[in-house]
Amino acid sequence: LRDDRHADWEQEEQLAERNEELRLLYVGLTRAQYALHIVWGVSRSEDFNGSALRWLLHGGQRGGSKKGEVKPGEIDARIDRLAADSAGSIVVRDIPDPIPASSLLRPLAEMTPPPAPRTVARVLPEPFGQYSFSSLRAQHRELLPARGADDETAISADPDEDRSLSGPDFGNTVHDVLETADFDAWRNAIAPPPQEMDRLREALQRRGLPQNDNATMQVGALVARALNTPLPGIATLAELMPGHYVREMEFHFRLGAVRLPQLFERLARYGYPRAYPASRQERMKGLMHGYIDLLYRDREGRYFVVDYKTNRLPDYSSATLTEAIRGHDYDLQYLIYLVAAQRWLKLRLGGRYDGERQLGGAVYLFLRGLKPGDAVAGVYCDRPPQALIDRLDHWFDGGEA
Image (cartoon, rainbow, N blue to C red; front, top):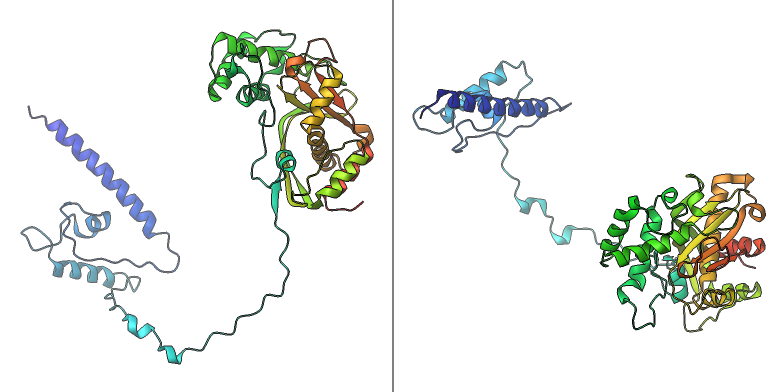
């Protein structure tokens, strides 16, 4: 059935569209400060209204020769009248003929010969790279440092264990939860708090692990242990106030042509020995890059770097933890972290920074060996001599002994 209202609505919509096109045309025509060039001509478009400019100048008529259409001569006449009435603001000109390409090219014989090539006399600088603990340990440059549990060995030899809940993916899931967990919600918890269950499942899903009760409980148990174990200078991480810690602290610091054999030799003098294969590269220069799982400030204003480890060990005695630290070069890792923390604190505190008093040391939590309420089991702490941290900072910056 015919309904004239539909025709009215359609006309209103078309007018609204045309008004918007005219508004945009106005904006485009009035933004020029010194000159505006418009190219125009006859269009064979089947759109009756055509562009906003054609609709404005020619009342919506198409160019062409059919009955009811504006003819090319009429278009020219209208444009000329518009220019005549503009008091010189509008000038109509024909588009000039294109310049032949041949006239732009000079004969080869007329061209000035190029100058003789210069001999390079500068000595090119050493390659600039980005390094991390992982690359330093492997002795190669890399773009991205290991994050979370990527530097851990967490595969269990137990044939009855669910292998999906071991290894870097599982360790990274635990790190992901600790990176975003509501610390206060985990206070005194031995199992995942109800409000944290979604966070656990999302972390498992992100790593492609099962999201069943067994998996969530295992991840939750390790998180609960990490957050409720007494640490140096504080009760537990779960009781830390916001603003007293930084999670997943990313850092870059300058490396100024570090000679690795000499660096490793100096570390050995301070009680941090490690073998240096002669076949590996001998220098690093560029940036040291990494992520500190957690940096916290204790009640006395000391700053500690914390790293979470999900490695499975035969036991978690002090001797076994020391062996794992040395065997995986984690002591080299936390020495790098302490230099990064010191450089950050120097920037934040300026002349008020006192490394001997304010740099607390490193705390490594082997989560599978932690026992809430026990400040020893599964916890490895080290406070390297401040002289070593200062000199390592100096050596990393390219300084000599």
